Length: 435
Image (spheres, helix red, strand yellow):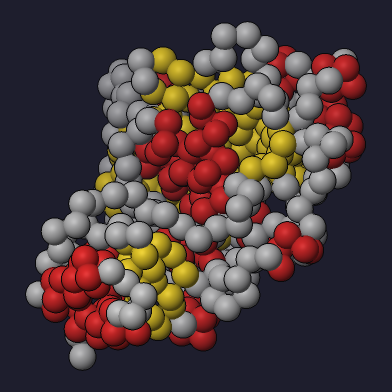
């Protein structure tokens, strides 16, 4: 049975079961939608996804507001609470199903896997009409099996909120965002974080806070000071961010720290506010999911020692990511690329390991989620993504020939390949800022 016919059957059954309580108009509307589903066409107005998430997307730090309790959590429906979503119907039910399933999978995998229409059809358990949208329920066992087959662990989110120290220059005054002084970007980030089972908490900015933290502390990467100021909030993780707005483009740079002030990951993004917030929330979730899965300095599971790998094979390795960059025509270009990667939050010890088809093979030291580097380079105004772990430098000076680099690989050129099992994220138009 096709997906559309299955949804048709679910909606028809719902219409029959609810017929005694629905008005004639309501019953007719449900029946009409069911009939439309059989034709795989819907005339309903397209809208945004409404996700079944915990009621508190963000939490403002307050001495009078209690933190979420076990009682709050129990108030949510227990059956399939994390495996459901409400999806607006666009051009077809198949499209609505895939969009809804993608939302659920993003929430349960920290955005580490992008499902297919076949995946969505296999996992569909029930569909109902709710307030003009599809209320979809997916089979937990099928989802867990799907993620396990992709090598993706089920993401449960964080028990405690993340304390956020954000310097937002779009605010008229009091640049640091607080629970009582929110910015539009902070509000958008809260919503997106909830999609990935993250909660954000903002400081009170009372006398205790303002005597310890100002925007200069955030911009100067004074992580020890931020950790000391965050102790009162009991958070396990600290997010320090700088945000600016110019000509409708948001520039956001962030550092993720543990409660002791140790740096976990960094990234920078430019783009429309909603896009930057969504990408930033996903990067945070994937970083935290990976961080929680590691023990001390243990390498991520499945990553190969770069010394044992083919020098031309691209992708993540233990302690680094190997990428291919074309469009580099001078030593000045190489220096500029290294400076750009430092702005992105990476170390200055980037090395050129080989030449391949006139392009450089760079090894970028990093223990963070490699998807963050890939996403940053893909959306940056400095690079254009041309394939998995393959980019083109857009700001070449063309001052000198490539021969000035000397011989960096005593072997013939060959096609670069990605490390198996690890796919790079798709390129998206946007830019990059710096903290």
